[in-house]
Image 1 (cartoon, rainbow, N blue to C red):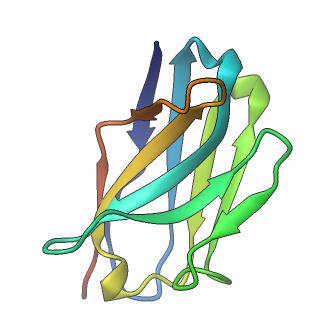
Image 2: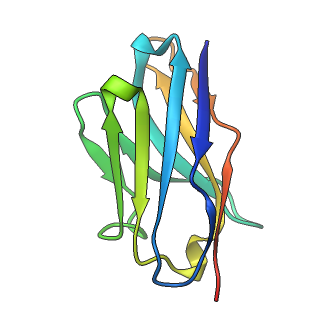
Amino acid sequence: QVQLVESGGGLVQPGGSLRLSCLASGSIFSINPMGWYRMAPGKERELVAAITSGSSTNYADSVKGRFTISRDNAKNTVYLQMNSLKPEDTAVYYCNAEDYYTGYDYWGQGTQVTVSS
């Protein structure tokens, strides 16, 4: 089992920044990749960014150049640095971890990000 705990969400003005953190615990040896998804009201959940154990990254087109995903293996933590935030970035952000061997997806509880003036 893997547990994921997100933190760092909140209310920010357009153009502002936030950093989300996701702490993984439990049977983390088989986790790869990890990533962030988001779900806005009335929309489907979408991939925001993902990172492999080798630090290869993948981003949604809508966040390229504004968001950066990174990981600190020593701290079992994945980060999402979000800059130049827009109102359309408002959503609940979920941390995701995939079991490399089984393909099983683990999810965090979600953290709300609201971009509004």
